[in-house]
Length: 139
Image 1 (cartoon, rainbow, N blue to C red):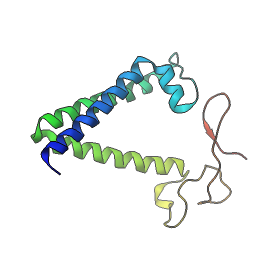
Image 2: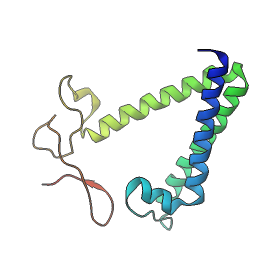
Image 3: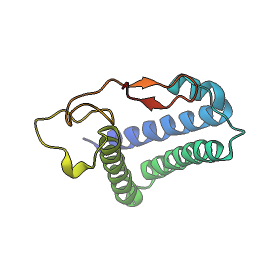
Image 4: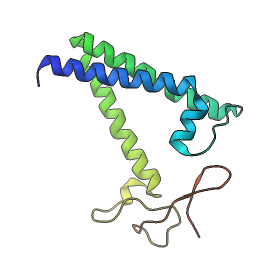
């Protein structure tokens, strides 16, 4: 891959994050409803904090990717931090969606199982709770 393509990729990643962050913060209710199918309550301080903090973080990464595209010397640290963050996020999602700690996930078994499934490793059905938008497992 040439230097020009690396720079283009980083500019694209930066623009993607900046557009996503700006649109999410400009119209939170619409953005949240598109992603989650439920309403966001900005009146709830905890929801408002985490929603805004997440998208401000996305904006900061967008700026970081643009700076990494412009300055080759600063590229390695931001790409390393971004890559490690994505790996950690993936591991957390697998652990949370799987309903059990990662150390108990065995090879050859489905990872996605709803908490409270009949047997470990057997996929459960996930559905939205009618009033809170929380994931639930049918009894």
